[in-house]
Image (cartoon, rainbow, N blue to C red):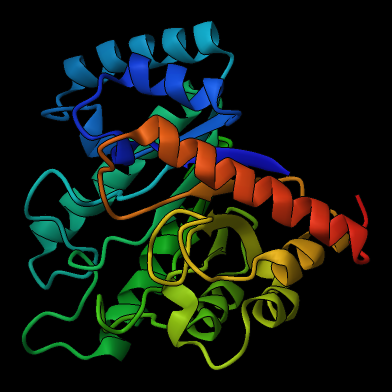
Length: 280
């Protein structure tokens, strides 16, 4: 298994120091929230930051995994806004992020961003999904040319009212039918699903290109009661060679201790999965 960490958990710690902490605790990849590194998103700032990020990753021997929280900044974005200026600005921003991913070697762009995809007044969920399907299909070729994937993330209904199940996400992915458009699995966001995590991963395996790992409650692995072993066994048996990116929803006071707890729990789950039928 390859373990990565989502960088926003480090809060105000400089990116270089955060990367050092991650590699020291055994993580080998980093998944970046663009708002945490690109500041005003101007072309000059992005260009400068890409050079800095690439240099830091090379120095620390960390791999770039991809981006998430794609649309949190700049303010005012929405994937299906009836204002076509806002909608185009949103998808142009997505294209810029794809270019950034390409400059960092390619990667996964996790499309969560609940506020920027929820229904707006006068719109239905189906209308938003239709626009989302159309826009993803139109950007799929560009994503492929950037050696990147856009992953439609199912979100729980308390966050968003558009694509709130893995089945909904997969149906959109199937409709688009492009290798650069896939979905992903997040243990926390799957807490409302009716089936256990390992069954969902098995059922939708052909369309899952990435994993966000966390406790059902949203904390780091090892801080709750989630049994990761069945899911790890399923991933191993499918030969999954992608990333398990740890995403949590807090900034811990002692990130090094949390990273240690999390990777210890994940390695223990991986070993248990191997000892109970998982195939390395």
